Length: 303
Image 1 (cartoon, rainbow, N blue to C red):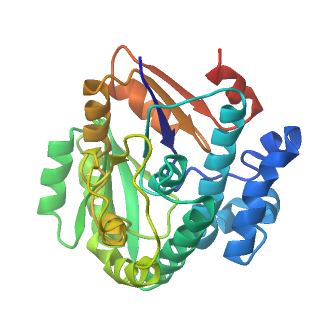
Image 2 (image 1 turned 90 degrees about the vertical axis):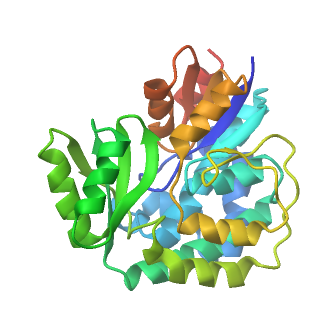
């Protein structure tokens, strides 16, 4: 038996997420304090007091989700939780890098600060959007995108029946309409632009410059990569890899298949909502999938 810790992606944020864990164990607030010092704003207050629209802003959503994910993980570790590998969906890879020792907590927030600023700036200058397409095979989604006027591509391969498309807003809307004509369901995502597409190239360039001198260690457990859809073994130039990550598709379905092939049978998602838990359950048979986002679900991890 082997267990993997998974970490939530952008779009999963909600007001007051994870705060009951802090109220139960005040020592966990140190994660928010370290984050706030690096970010230059009070992250706890953003999560506690902001409305959904404010929290959805990239500069807030990314560090807020990462901090919440790490608070959830730390709460579980205090109860004896251990893991044999890590992975995250898009933004979640950064919490995964902290969880496996590739980045210190401080450097994790320095990197996510640079990423959120770069992506927020690029989003303002690109009329991009992302929409989840449900109940349609990835190959069919690819075909539809290729036939649409304008720029739209599959950006997140989440499961056999869920692919997120991204690109120019009008092209995404046309592709979504073509998919719904085939009885698919289209759900626009609460993100600022077309992440994991070429529209984010200015962000990738700015991000690389900002983090090129950050020190990355080799992970202490296997780290699964969105870009590769498998375990990453080359860590020689992680700033370049992470810049590439911003403009590359997320191959989460391939990652899940690789995890199962490598003997992982227990999947625990840390962070707001349970999106990845749902993807695991829809994609893999004969595995256990749980999530931890508050005091109640923390108990469920150990049930």
